[in-house]
Amino acid sequence: MADRKVTRRKFVQTGAAAAAGVVAAGAAANLSAADKKKIINYNSEMEYRPCGKTGMMVSSVCLGGHWKRIDKMVPGVFKGRGWLSAKLDDPGFQKNRHDVISKCIEVGINYVDACTVQECKAYAKALEGRRDEMYFGFSWYQEEMRSLHNQMSKAKQKGQPMAPGWITQKLMDALDKGLRETGLKHVDLWRITMHEQSSKHSDAEVEEMMRALEKARKQGKARFTGFSSHDRPHIKKLVEAYPEIVDSIVTPYTAKTKKMPGDSLFDTLAKYKVGFFGIKPFADNNLFNEAFKKVKGDPPPSNPETDRLARLAIRYILCNPTITAPIPGIINPHQVDNVAKAVAERRKLDVAEAKELEEAMDEAWAKLPPDYQWLKDWEYV
Image 1 (cartoon, rainbow, N blue to C red):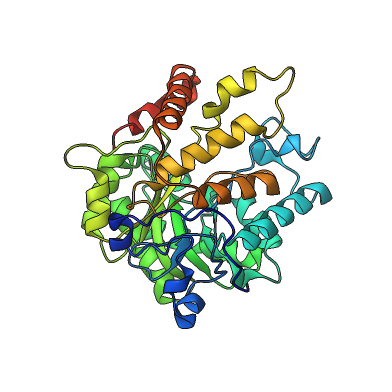
Image 2 (cartoon, rainbow, N blue to C red; image 1 turned 90 degrees about the vertical axis):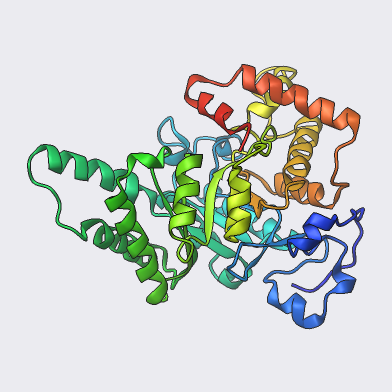
């Protein structure tokens, strides 16, 4: 993409960000033509951060794979109750995903995180003819560690334990199947989905997973490797135990997350130069609870108040130089523009903005549904 003149407000590049190798929005004048070429889909209005030790410079806000409210944009697209029931061959759905990817490319976003079979297929389709414009994070979730762990447990209960190496082979089979069914020649980051509480996996299971990741890199099927988990102590343990294999992690980071005073996961990630993609930046849309209440009937995909809260959340999260990027799920091009706008706005929140975001997150915490109470464990990381 051709470089474009900076028109949005430039923000001051902090010392911590500079030390982390961040290429801030408005810093284009400090980059050589060669440096710009190293950043895929470079746009001078976007900020780029190193994804750990991979060498990839990733936009500081990226596209999460989920499309949980896409039925607001494409009515009737869900075959069942869940968002993963979306009809992938629906023309309206395909146009929506194509348009969202197009807007991402336009504003300089260069990473999409696809963590289910459906997402991998949908985004591979949306990226046809422009695969080189975005890094592709990949997880064939339904056939990875959660399912394999359950199969192992059942086999053991029946007195028929799986042979050593079974998990490694099954993971490689899943990767091969995913590449075949999506038409992808390789993935940039194979980030295997583990159990949310990944310490449920035995050390032997983890070892076989790591062998699969290492094998995929050697075979050129995955350029870089990592995993997703919601289990902070276990993430820390795996990063320390497998520093040559864990290039990046995917784990929660909300607008209420803070650095733990001691023994923080952030310190471990910085020490081992591990990338960090943050899911749930809007606390599964609970950040917008009060804003939604003000709307009569079914709330629209976005409005000025939800747009402002979303930008405040992104700005808050990006104050931490350890995170590579938050990866919100996005359902229309307007929302892409909005999060890109947040990157170019002044970084540090003023007193009134901080108060507004804190109150919205306090309300979100108070009204979290039962199946999302676990997000409260991510206030101190």
